[in-house]
Amino acid sequence: MSRTRVHNFSVSLDGFATGEGLSIEEPFGHAGHRLHEWFTTTRAFRAMQGAPGGSMGVDNAYAAQHGPGIGAEIMGAGKFGPPGWQDDDDWTGWWGPNPPFHTPTFVLTHRPRPSLEMEGGTTFHFLDATPADALATAREAAEGQDVRIGGGPSMVRDFLAAGLIDHLHVVIVPILLGRGVRLWDGLEALEQDYQVESVSTPSGVTHLTFSR
Image 1 (tube, rainbow, N blue to C red):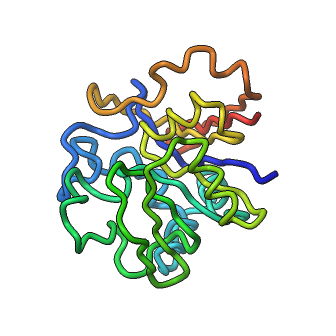
Image 2: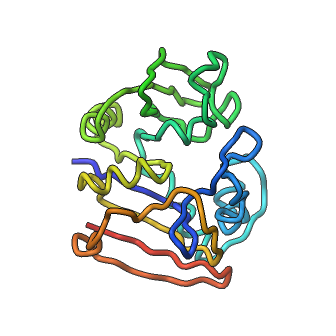
């Protein structure tokens, strides 16, 4: 059976994966882009944007694992758009006409809408479903490849609580946010179900991988 994978999921030292005050101007709230600076400087990220250059090394090696073998993605409503996007029939996501997913992508929302076909192979499907039901749908669409669980933190936490994540890559970024949405709440003793490895890099971040 295909695996479920989380990649490049950044959290602060105090466990917040996004800040407070999300809006169309500030997709990560008061955190800004500080959680993701390690990622956006890598060659793997720049290649996703169609740009040359970028850093190599350990951070890039982890960043590059995001895409290979993925046949579908599941994301939460908060990753697809800012609060209230469901009221805007013209909203098509943050990523422009050619999103970086290139697979069927399932958006979990209590207000489904018709599927949205984009350039580059991405089609957004909007589901009101439990994590287990959404995963079953995504696995069928993935045709034997793995399913990426894309975030945000509330959705990843729900999938972890349901025991549905096979590989979790979390990046601890040395900042303190103090407020926002935390990843780890309610997941006491999660580590007992996984083999955990830790690698720190010159950029100051620590990569944690949880492998079932």
